[in-house]
Image (cartoon, rainbow, N blue to C red):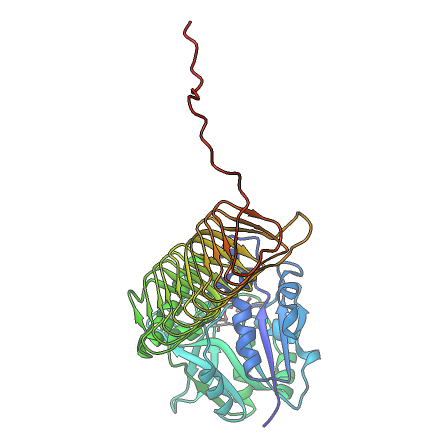
Length: 454
Ligand code: UD1
Ligand code: CA
């Protein structure tokens, strides 16, 4: 197959966003608009990706530098044709060039594939709109063949009635594209170099012009305002929610879930309202996620219940665990199966083996906890001396009494018991009771101080 180059137009100012940030860096589903386009572009395995940027200085190239694209500056911005011209030095003639828009984030892979399969020549992505106002119109002849694209501002009354519009996304043989762009004029209503003028040139030269339509209109919707951004966000969330429902996932309310990344669910997963999933999240079979929980880059094994208001970030949770409500698992937490983590428990960079429990009000950081350990309410691992972090190791079957401080580095022996209220600074032996608190005593006859009467 002919190699593919992709040009992403992202130089526009985005005046109607009323923001200092370039338009294409505003996020949809947790990811900058232009990154959606770059991700889809990369999935097509092109030979070259060239992003045309303009407004916002280096903001776009520096935000997207890890994407392996070339960035070309368009300054000043003299139209879409002029924008594509800036990419020409980076495109080889033995290729086809696909032009995408940095502010049209949701074009689906199938649609781009249909364009590639539509034939040689020029391929336009078009869509029929009830209200075509503002868009370039696709003008066809009596036989239904495309003749040209006419912009709204240049269209006559008859052309304005056409409902088939240009999405802006086109695929063209690069050598031809170079030739056509070289001939562009700006004698039109906006005084711009229109990319759309290449259509009439192709027709004139007898180069075939094909059109492809996306399966859904939202695939070609562009963002010009915060209102359009919010609307497309809701559309995309609804699309993802329906995909989950169709796979058998139970959603308490498909309008109240946000997926900002990729959510993979096993059978019989149930998700309550208000949950947010970020990055890559995997939920095993029968996992239940309670209301208003936030999961980011996490995997939750089958049968685990996550109670409401739980936050899980960059962690692995084993099967049949019970987490929350109000639990927080921070990066590097790995829980084996049947672990219980209760309310107001924070765990970071720690491994907790099977059947262990920390049910109330604890901080467990940089720890390795064995199996069947019971961590009492209020237990804190003191892992940080202000400069360095140290590990706490707790052996299998240990019982840590409530309100204990474990000052790391420290090891609690297997089957050891720590008396409540202890501050443990030295390793404790297996199987023994260790405590460090002063003995309780009673001072009989002691009187509370009282205020002296004046
Ligand atoms: C363009 C099309 C129109 C189509 C519409 C779809 C042209 C002449 N018209 O119109 O047929 O229906 O898109 O939305 O192509 N850009 C640059 N540099 C520039 C100008 C634009 O990078 O000099 C980028 C913008 O950032 C944007 C895209 O190109 O991502 C489209 O530009 P815009 O000004 O919105 O084009 P329209 O006038 O809407
Ligand atoms: Ca536009």
